[in-house]
Length: 186
Image (tube, rainbow, N blue to C red):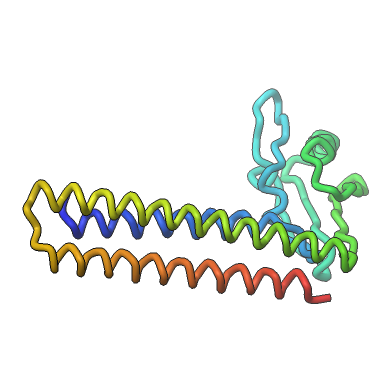
């Protein structure tokens, strides 16, 4: 492995940590209707566990309501059961054609609680990025021994690794503060 490959692998892993954080933030309820909350709903479709979003159209109505229109109307009851089983915290309302999920407005206490969850998820992502930095530094030390890299080159690479880590940490902070702002907006 070369130093460039090591840096490239490290960046890829850090990108994955940020993407995982964004996905996690997408599933956090903010009082607004967000179709990503349905990602964990799996419906038993003729004995095959199928993700809800593959078997229905999901649209946002008036910012507070998700409208789920199944492609096959005969599975409406199965979809309702799966949504209740997934414990979304919202009761589905069916009119025989579509299912509506109405998101209630969040209380101030609940918003603060969600902000704590956001901070914890952001901190977990930062820990993941720092662990990747540690792995990159360990790989650099191995390369130093194997290829007899000069000390000043090693120092430059360590600085480069730190700059990459700082950049990703800053990105995590920005994403988290954006999410907190979204949660606290009434």
